[in-house]
Amino acid sequence: MNTVVYDAFREDVIGRSNVRDTPELVSYYKDLERLGTAALWTVANKIEPWEPKSASVPMLWRYRDLREHVLKSVDLVTPEQAGRRVIYFENPGRKEEAAAVGWLYSGLQVMHPGENASAHWHSSSALRFIMEGRGAYTIVNGHKMTLGANDFVITPNGCWHEHGVEEGGLPCIWQDGLDIPLANAMEAGFYGVHPDLHQAIGYPVDDAVSIWGAPGLTPQGVKWNQNYSPLFKYQWEPTYEALVRYSKAADGSPFDGHLMNYTNPSTGGPVMATMGASMQLLRPGFVGKAHRHTGSFLYQVAKGSGYSIINGQRFDWQEHDVFCVPSWAWHEHVNTSQTDDACLFCFNDLPAIQSMGFYREEALADNSGHQPLTT
Ligand SMILES: [Fe+2]
Ligand SMILES: [Fe+2]
Image (cartoon, rainbow, N blue to C red; front, side, top):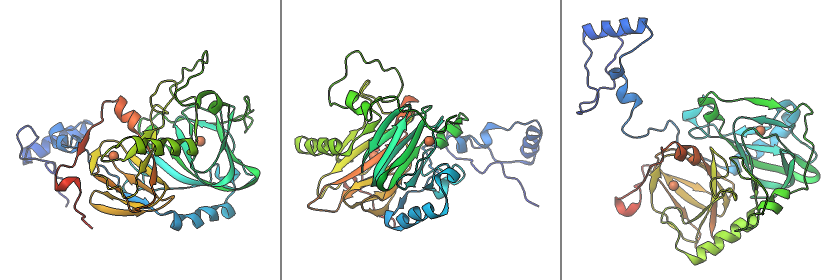
């Protein structure tokens, strides 16, 4: 017969719960269970750990292993059948939530020239980072945007959106990132399919970039009161140029090198209410120091090669590889090239974490700020 243990989380520390099971207490706990209740001290140390204990495992997904499988999905299902033809990243610690890390979902989507997916909306916010191909586009609330390699585009919570690749383009692969697990954890997820299956395009193509995309300038008299960026699309070339200039003008961060956040030009804040994104440049030979912070982070290598050490484990990466840093995991980044810079695209749940007051950060003090390797 299995004996139920109620004192598994007992800690012999003043201020923490430390109640040993006795026959009298166990019978009392069973009475409580029959009433749909329980004694807090039996679980207090479990539900309020001393520090975050992420269920997510640090992971790296190699693009050279995944690419052919992503392309194969084109032969197996149509966008009409699949809705979205995506191979998603499944973190072994977060399978139930279909999360790549923490409360973030991500996957690789492929579309062939002439294909398009029907318009829909959902409560989760979404973003896309274009990896390869030519002729990809996204339409968000009637704004059509053309997309090239390493461009980043948002499809915020509640917006009608659809994606496609123009006839005459090349097969396109991009990374999707959504806060689906977060929306589900909050039990707030809705989904809708457009009654006409496609939106009417109501504006000149790429109008958002024309109106909001000039650095340091905002258009007079254009009102914007949504909680997401009116720019929608962030192009690679000006982003990279800005990073190169920044890296020549200042030292950057000992942890991240030269990192720039994608921002909402009307507020200076993050691109969406729940998810933020950044691009960082690691100079040739950059060796970052280790730190850790709350929030979940998913990286895509936009350029170059190097490695990251995450909780003592080394992950070597090259262009288009994706890796995750779970909440409160130690991490440090290294560019192994002595001649070329490396760039990491990253999206995260920092806006949600910060708006709830949950952000914490710590630098590794020991060992000159570098983690000992555990594997
Ligand atoms: Fe969507
Ligand atoms: Fe970090």
